[in-house]
Length: 192
Ligand SMILES: Cc1ncc(COP(=O)(O)O)c(C=O)c1O
Image (cartoon, rainbow, N blue to C red):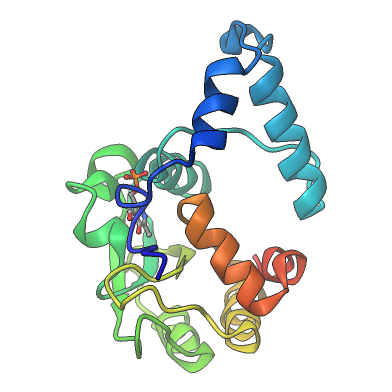
């Protein structure tokens, strides 16, 4: 059995260790690290995007994504057990100054109706919801994978109301497992 519980559990193979030791390196800040550059180019091509950026941790990626997509005082829709809410030491508040609109998902997955309900709540003084977070795979729900149709539907419900979406993806082994399971890498990306 291969334990994919976490990238802190999986061990690099000797081939991976060798590749790391022999990798060409350079000043990444100046865009001169050939290995990082190759990775970014490969991922952008794989996902059909203009560009990609390597970030060394998922917590950092989540913080940056939330900050880029929102302004302080706005709100983000997320599942009650999601990582950004429960396991990032309040990063949503610290880095982005946003409030969570918590929805109760089934195994980490919520519905377009739940999204629409949150987005149609009215009131002058309510924070405006500008972001929806889908955790893929969902950590606290046991590594559950969003069914593609459901992911498409919740993202569509958000986009129809001009709300941005982020799909948090964690650790290459787990992400690969998701994409292999569904063989739908590009289609998953296209939802977001
Ligand atoms: C959904 C999710 N986001 C963020 C993280 C944190 O990852 P990192 O340790 O790379 O910051 C995890 C870790 O398992 C996770 O499952």
